[in-house]
Amino acid sequence: MTDKVFIQSLGCPKNLVDSEVMSGCLREAGYQFVEAPEDADILLVNTCGFIQPAVEEGIDVILDLAKVKLEKPSAKLVVTGCMVQRYRDKLQKELPEVDLFLGVDDAENIASALLTVTSTVSINLKPDPPHYLMSCETPRVISTPPFRAYLKVTEGCSNRCSFCLIPSLRGPLRSRPLDDLIAEARLLEESGVKELTLIAQDLTAYGLDFGTGRERLPDLLTGLLENTEIPWLRMLYLYPMRLKQAIIELVGANERLLPYFDIPLQHISDRVLKAMNRPYGRNSVEKLLDSIKEQLPEAAIRTTFMVGFPGESQSDVEELAKFMSVRKLNHVGIFTYSNEEGCEAAKLAGHCQEEVKEDRKERLMALQTGISLELNRLLLDTIQPVLVEGVSRESDLLLEGRTRFQAPEIDGCVFISSGTCSPGDLVNVKITDAHPYDLVGEIVKQK
Image (cartoon, rainbow, N blue to C red):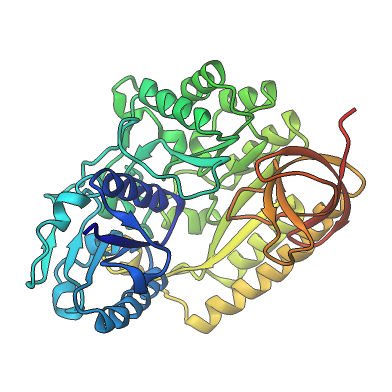
């Protein structure tokens, strides 16, 4: 009898691609998939281990599935991903309910690893550092709607931000060959993908490990434009110091490259940025934003800021608030600093109390809410191309989609109040109402 698998993927889109690879490999091995854990013989969780809240979420999910396993003792509970990579020495003791632990290098080996599961808890980790890199031939089951998908451009990261564990969890930067990425993009296009989102821990570092001494992201973008006809190409995680003029110019010259810049700035205070080991300062950030807006006035800019970093003062927060008020960025995520063992920042002096961090976060998020509403109101009565997602999660009386300025699963959406369309359609929508994060509109006929 064929074993049935339930997979739950936690964390970022990069982790989601790993889960899709595991699904593809298991499907090739003859496994079937179920949507309810109660129906599964294999309960699989792909975890995130980046910060403590993500670890806590992973533990909660594992314990929930362990309760399912109690009702079905023959089921096997398997935990994979970054949390395993991070806590390899503690997991067997802390989570005896788990039958098998797999690290970040085992996505493609999931089927053979399951054959090793016995009554004895085991942990399977490749030698450090991780070295896995998928290819266009890697089996993969797309879990997003069929009209959009992620293209994982690199693995790992060679930046050394003082607050980040990614290099230790995922290893150094490893870029996929350009031809391989284009081949996968063409396969995704053939499957019906209309929006392809390029993802990496640092997308702008693509190709630095090829030995040429230069970033190759412009070459990749050009290759995708020349070898596919995918209507929307979106980029996520553009490192500020490497977002060069060539990329901005490419976006300006090609409508298929969406004018959406996801640039994780983390802070704006020179003093805090230096402590974070971010190799840029406020002046270079201002010049970069000026360059984008001068060439692409309509471009949407998304960023994340971290508050409560060790040594952050009230004046640093005031500087950040003023910057946000003046710059009026379209999408801003505010996160509190999480003190993670193994990060250089953990050794710094001046750690903030949790209440202080939360107060700073709430204040800046309230500020951004007003900014986002102001910017969304500027879109009233304009006609925007929208990629239709389907029936709204808010009401089955509405359809839901996204403009070029809204990334899937991250930003807001457009509620479509009238008109006829199907999921995956690209339609023109007249914006009739605006909220801080969402828009409302009506489909208008193409002229």
